Amino acid sequence: MSEQEHKAIFEEWLHQYQALLFKVVRAYATQKADQEDLFQEVCLQVWRSVPRFKGASAVTTWLYRIALHTAITWKRKINKREEFSILYEQEMPQDDTSSNKNAQLEWLFAEITRLDKIDRSLALLLLDGFSYKEMAEIMGISESNVGVKIYRIKKQLTQRAQKHQAHGL
Amino acid sequence: MDFKDLQKVWNQQTNEPMYIIDQQALYQQIQRRAKQADLIAKTNEWGMMTIAVLTSILLLWIGKDTAYQILASVAMLGTGVYVFWQRRLRLASLSQQPDSILEELDQAITNANYLVRFAQTFVYWFLLPTAAVTIFRMTQKEADPWRWLFILGAFLLSFLIVRWELISKHRPRKRALEELKETLTREVTES
Image (cartoon, rainbow over all chains, first blue to last red; front, top):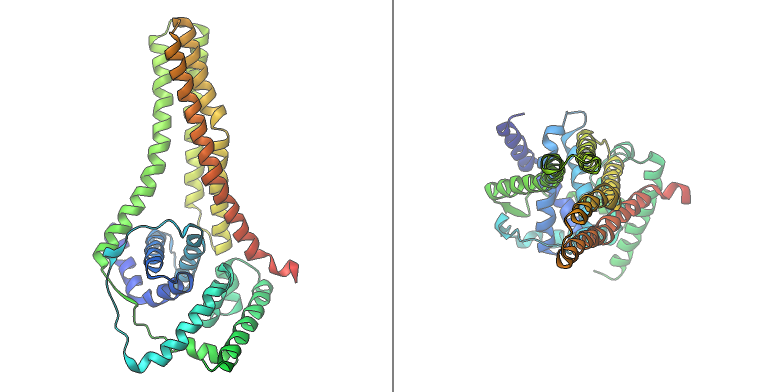
């Protein structure tokens, strides 16, 4: 694979699937500086993975796996920060009509970040509609293991949601 | 509120990016970091191999062809071969494509083990042969006490640095990876 092809595929993936990468980043990093750091790390790993992608799975499955693994291992070295401010020019403006929607989403992201590192990955995959089989393939664990974890995650999230609703938030 | 409601909240997300990305800066940064990581590993390995081979040649070239010197030269060459072999193992492990996060974790643990073993055995495959050769040469030349102090201090320092790296970097990294793997696989056996 030539460098031009490598770069073209990487840019296409980044353009088409950046929302997926941002979801993972938001689930694992809460501070903006951390999000930038993690996004940088995820992009680096995605870049490295381009020549290894043989098309055996969907690009989304591939990118999820790369991004989740990077995020899980990144959590261990969270204190080690670097300056990546040059990568981001500005934050997207949020309009008023979406404020309620965003509040609910913010709450959901906050709850996801309260889960442990592995459960966070599964929660993201679950919410994005991946099947148990796909989740098992991405994570490398058995479907029954996924089932046990998902049951617990669903229970945990719905209980917190009910509590949140009861408090009228 | 049940899980379906949470999914509805989740699905409200649009594909709007959180940031406007400066593609060019990102691309350059990534290339730099990718090259940097590879360069560090390559420099370490080639540096060690060059030192071992050059020392080995130098010993044969400037020496008096005593059995001790030939032995020391072979020992140094063996050090270089060992590093070369380890490098091949490392590259082979990098070329294998993991199919899941668990496999990636396994690969990361293998790499962490490699670094732990490399640091643990550093004394045997590098420090002892090098020290043996150097001290042997110094006993033949009747070096002054300051030189002895300097040489022994240098060996002690390199030993301490490698130990520090082992204790503060490699072992914790390996432990953290193993804990992650345990978390990932624990549930079914517990429930």
